[in-house]
Length: 440
Image: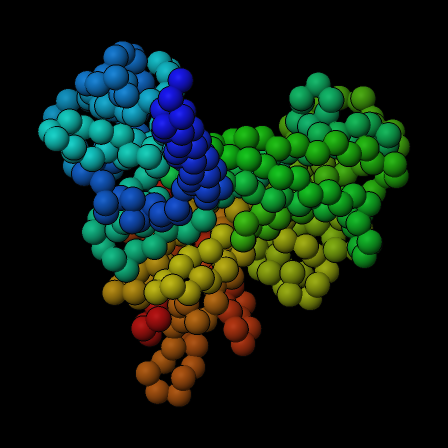
């Protein structure tokens, strides 16, 4: 074999080897970098179409590197089409440089779509999701197009369950319990992890009897991952469980006893005294009061009492009574500033859904779900968010409070930094408006 031929072959092999090494190095370098972060607002702006839907079928695409997805659209967030079914092309995952999103029939997702060469094509940032997103999740304006309206945080609850999954009102000493929240939600169109911390204390104790953090992974726009903690109370008493995550802090109380009475209650609950209900096994916070009376729990020992609304506020101010209900904190964000609003909702299954602030109308709107005969909500409103003052003298003046556009009377306590309003509402109420006489 000629020497020149061997030399040329050797040079060719070296060149090929260098090329392969270089290519491998480039790929490794590219794999070493994560996909650049792009905010949901920027993705929304950059996409020709954004929607949430479910893949119906998957088939060969317009070229060897693509699949076609037939998607049933549930919600259009940008550029809605006339049809609720749309075909989009998505790149296969055989590219070693970038991992493109892959979907199968039955997968639900947030789809970011751009028109490329006349074909609807999936963005690299499309991802599996649930249905907990709205247009506001993408940093867009509220559907009313009022830029002054900002939604508050979702409302959450803690549940105390036994090992069989039944809700426990009063637990027994040494009974294993499961503490959980069914209402976790990720309203953002990106997957994320939430760190949730549960702390349990006996009433008036300074040291917790239980403390545990938990990492909760959540896909985009998802509801209810249902994180849970196992807890076994070793002593009788009144307990408080506090769960914190993100900017939320929610709490609930429960009782633990050495012996639970199995004696049935012959009378209707509200025909028995609060103490008799409590002694029969009804949890302090589940005691029912007669009409026009309100439930309080004694601050020193957690025992229940039923009092008139006027007495209720006096006892709370004096520190004798602890307000009945679960104290939860939501927030409202206005012009980039977040304002915490602690609140308590009373009435069996009544709920506060969310709060909005309107700087133009100088008001707060509190949206509630009223499924009990009557209810009330107590809100602590920061003065920096909303206040009502006289034009001269800078004295506190009354708010105008409307429940479904009908003015109602409310009670109030005030501090230097906040005003706490207790507002009654009837069955079926939906919207409470708190209107001030001074700009926020």
